[in-house]
Length: 230
Image (cartoon, rainbow, N blue to C red; front, side, top):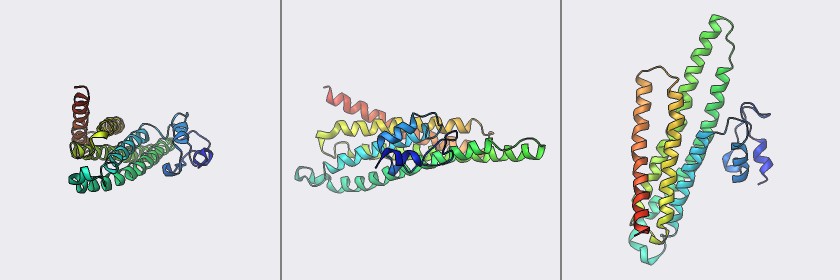
């Protein structure tokens, strides 16, 4: 698809197409990166984290595709087939979450632009900003969860897949671990604006759980690197 078509559908909150959300599935990689590099604030870090998840999931699928159907790896075929199905779903989910993150950020910026001349307007704006901030924390939290799932899939293929693509398995785990950390920053920047309470504590606990799994991804990468450099 022509890059211009993807660009026409997009624009950050300050661009000529302010508020428009691009369809990541319709973009070329170059077109999407062009928009990421632009002065528009969206897509931004949350969408980038989602793309990292998608890349990790795609690499997991690649490892399974180079395992399935090969007699020498027949013992691992059932597991690899199940992993491929989940990895393919996570890749699509990550792209969807990237769009949701972009939409949530745009909604937050809209809330910040509400009038605040009267006390009534200030109260309405404060409530809208608080609600939009909470909503903006949810897509990156889901991105961190998806990243943790990719790590778990990569772990399940260690020693149960084509060993000739073990380096690609390591890159999948590294991408997912990086995605989780990237998503965490975007969760935390929103949580920092919320008052302390049960909602904030619950979201923080969920994030820590996902980050713990992501750390296993780093451990998997280190283990594979040790194996490769022996």
